[in-house]
Image 1 (tube, rainbow, N blue to C red):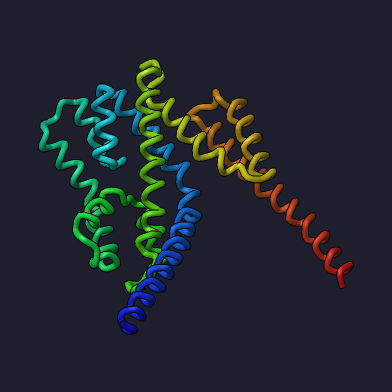
Image 2 (cartoon, rainbow, N blue to C red):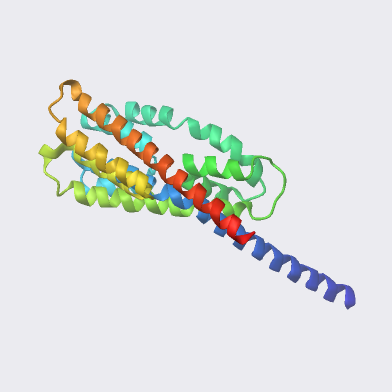
Length: 261
């Protein structure tokens, strides 16, 4: 009787500890992956618009983003689809583009070899480039550690959701955008989605303002050299202002330390 009770108690404690470890790992995975969601969504937006612009119908585009879920392979295959290339050429192109996932699978396999193949299959489908990179930064070794699966789920689920949301918005938006706007419109939206979250302080904002004004003033420069000049001036402004502001903070910090001492 007592051994059975002790075994049950031990299993309960182990389950509780595993749950707490998984919970902490999941939260950590969300925190680490959060900064990438905007970029993934923007990339999905571009691909979504591109699918409509090459002539795919709304159901075809939605099916491609939901069942293929491979941005690079989708973009590589779209021109071939538009050119009515043979099906085997389209599949071969997508296969070559996605060969890197063989390497990703070989990297992740030792960490999750204990899982059923069905679980590994759907995890493999949801796992993208960014998720693999972030996971390997956290778990570079194959040692057994609690929370690995929860950490990976926290990376792949929001990544998949961000892609699908961005891609579906792009598909719906692409059907409303005039053809004359082309893919340049999608590229502009993607850049805005990536850039806006990066404007986190006064120096970055000043750099964007200077760069934007310069780009407008030099729009007629030959070979689009005005864009290069705008980037250089914007970067220079942001770097100098950041150095200036950091220089003002240091004396104030030293003064506070002196007053405290």
